Image (cartoon, rainbow, N blue to C red; front, top):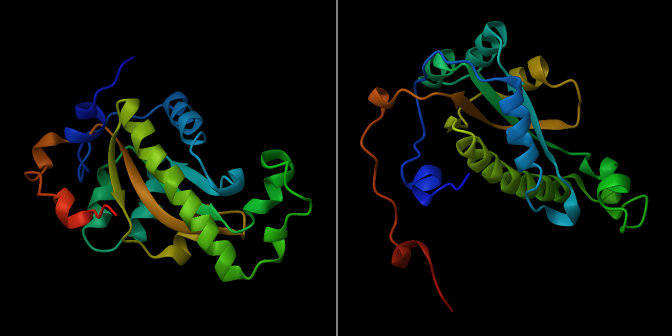
Amino acid sequence: MQLTDSQLFLDARSHKKFKDTPVSLDTLQSVYELTKMAPTANNCCPLRIVFVTSKGGLSTLAASAHGYNKEKVETAPAAAILAYDMRFYDHFAELAPHLSQPPSQAQWPEDRIEKMAITSANIQAGFFLIAARAHGLDCGPMAGFDAEPIEQAFFDVPSWRFGWVVLLGEGDPDALYPRADRLAFETACKVV
């Protein structure tokens, strides 16, 4: 399937309200299979995803949302909680066998580990959004949540840290505002 710039970027929107169309497990698995191909530092692959598709899970997630984000979550048939793993280096024997074992990252200070994890997980998260759109899903990315209750309710690995949430499904185009402007190349970019 040949996807266009319009499908992936120009016509794609951040949805705030969703129709009640379910998202299949096969679709979620396919989205991950593309997401995992994102480049990361030393192939560290720190992104962790908790897919929430049950009404109970979505209600728990909505309870941790700030303000209007609660209503957004309540309309979605699925959500992806994107996290980063502070112990990404535990998988280096498989993911980066070219590095010395145990990896030097295991001895780094926590702030340096977290910076590497967040940077690489965010690259993977960008791939996640494009992969979801490529599978015909509308996305509603958002960060307005209390992290601690999400980590307690959804993460069973202590080294995972909450990043942000992406609502997934068939968006309701009638709930969209007109697209706002974006910064011009001359404002946002510099060529040296």
